[in-house]
View: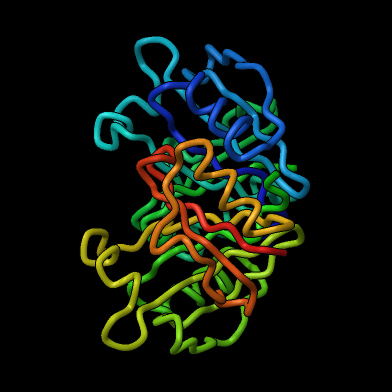
Length: 134
Length: 134
């Protein structure tokens, strides 16, 4: 069912420093910061030949990554995102297998304007997993 | 400098359960377990269309992931691996930029029989980064 690894998301305490690290030290192609107020984050996209790294920094007062950065002040890998063809079929398969979908179980429109769901880290090896309809 | 994301490594407390999760719940193609005694891990490879997920479980008494699993008993993302063309040039660039390379600074032969280095998580956004000469 899951297809491509769409991205790895890294929560970072200082977006300019993180962008510089990926651009100047690791020599990758990085975007300008992209504010995504609906999602409570500002994102710098790191373009690799086969996938993306997304550097996330909190935006606004109810950012979904604020708690993570409080627990991990140096930053860290926040989630991985796998592509699926059909988000509702994926949701139903997760439920049938006993895996928990976060929220009310209905897909939301994600940061790439596509339907997404998040799966419970306790059911996925301590890893927050996002599914995105590709 | 960095090229493809070679893999995302997830440390797991139960390899059979983790393999089943990726195969039966997420519907991915997973390998049989591959013992890598030189590296202190047994690995299940999850083949995605654009990259790999590596599910790691400790093997032997001095596994490099044993401490991580003690701190994270449910598992979690242990490291990301980026490909580079020239591991020594990459090492020198890291040092020139003030980023710490783990160990004695000399590449080791990694789990894919290619030269690798690990970079200090404190210098890379709380993320353990492996560089592998592709």
